Length: 155
Image (cartoon, rainbow, N blue to C red; front, top):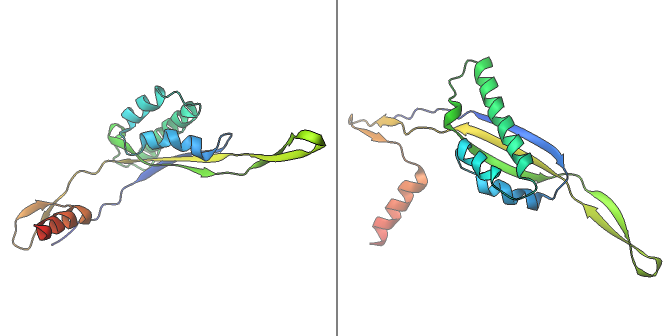
């Protein structure tokens, strides 16, 4: 069986040193993971979280990067066929602050920051592969074929 390896091209954008905790940013990022770009923008637009406009801006930047790089490098990228490949919020530096406490003491606390990374990629279509016998079939992932084999074995 012959397989054609097509490398998926990713286009990414970052927003660094955002003044929120990574946990709060991940709440919005988890909403858009795996969605088509148009659907992800609509989802973020109607979100009530404070980080939603920042993440929408990063997503728009990733889409613009895809359009720009595809024009510059003569790639065949359909911007309407993009989806959110990865959306992560990494921890940034922490600002150490002091809060007054009773009896003249001071309590330390930390203001967290995060780095938001969004990457988009183009959806791959199922490719036809010819077997040695000459019949054609659709390529399946190993996980999907493994589940079918284990289901047959359990019957």
